[in-house]
Image (tube, rainbow, N blue to C red; front, side):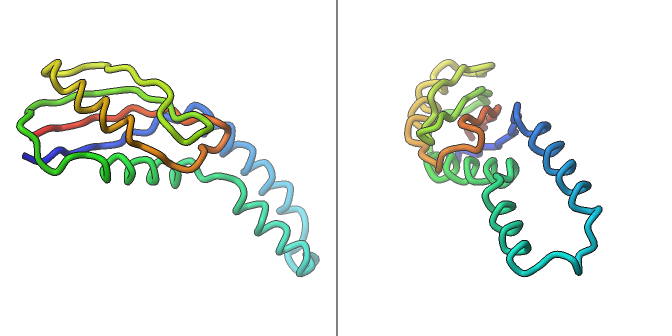
Length: 134
């Protein structure tokens, strides 16, 4: 049986990051683009790259969870979990929100323990994850 993992990212810091970027974009909008020198363009491009895209990070986490999810299992049911990835790129805490079968918890514990991604932007990343075992 296959395990299907769906990531529903709930990032607590995402709103502030987007607001900050839009504020900077509106401030930069006061300057005509022709007035920006090549050095300024390179600096801005590097600064933009260094700012993390929360959606891109969520996609990385989802891919890593899928990579560690077993393709087949004898388990059946649904489980929802809330987890946090710390500065190490590892899951530092998780809490099962709901499970149709308590046995699913140990399988999800193994999956989350094996997740290792780059350090999250802002130092931590929190998301809700639904696993469907069938």
